[in-house]
Amino acid sequence: MKSRRKRTLLFLSLIVIGSLFVYLTRPFVQNETDNENISLQSKTDTEQLKISLQQQMKRNESDALYAIQDTQQVASIGSSNELYNVASIRKSIISALFGIAEKKRLVDLDMTLGQLSVDDSKQPLTKQEKSATIRDLLQARSGIYLNALGESQRMKDLRPKRESHTPGSFYYYNNWDFNMLGLILEKETKMKIGDAFEQWIAKPVGMKTFSPSHVTYEKNEETSIPMYRFYMSAENLARFGALYAQDGKWKGRSVIPIKWVEESTMAYSKISDVDRFSGYGYLWWLESNAKNPLLWGVGSGGQFLIVDRKNNLSIALLNDTGTSPLSTLTYRWFGQESTYAEARAIHRLLIK
Image (cartoon, rainbow, N blue to C red; front, side, top):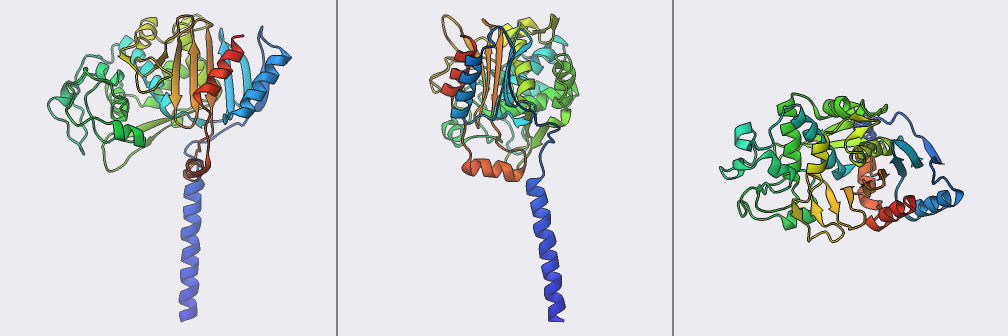
């Protein structure tokens, strides 16, 4: 009898271990292709440039580089069609969706959270907090300082005290704002974020590998506002950036309103705590340079999107930070990331 009981317990233990392994290794999203390549195609297509880019990519931790100029690929190194978690670059993407939604008259940026009837049921908003507008959230100036999914320890440490600033009066890089924007977009457009991106951006610019399922959601017990994540290939991310390099157009077709491109890339806040950037727009980092100002989308783990409007150039530089619970944990324990300086070096090579 004891022997049979031991065998049963062993069998059940193996099932539990096996199930746990399947869960930990199951990808959040499915990669359909893994296109490892090195290619250059442009007027700058020289052997020396190829060597320089390869050397720079070996020095940094990035797994994929893809660059587009005038809607044409100019550089592709690594697995440019593999899916990566673009981390906080998701914020620049959601900004574009709001620009399109506003053009379609689906959202009013000056509506308050109170008027929109949105709230955080686990951390109910005060009357003052409910007076924040969509525009305040886009500028990271909501005055709402609550627990949020995806916060770094630094963000938590810098979080102001609740109601210490009125909406619109103070800049604080705030994941609560960014996550709430996803909820508002879905509520007002009656579309999931992935569906809106596919219809409004992915299809018009020819992102053949994008699927709405590449936008996932995370929840926890501290807040009722879920965090959305975008998984994208370097090629597709570069195509998105190219829209901002070309005044919102792709091959002559308007995708993002030019008014929004201009409005969303103005500095509404001066940045003092991130020395490499001078301002923050509607979820875009701005690098002020008299000769050539750049737009940046930046995500933890070494994810970069550089938009050079002067040279009509978009550069996506992505790092594999994990696409399953196990691989994500492994990266957090042992992974490294490319730096801003290394991303800047790639840009310098491509504009020579």
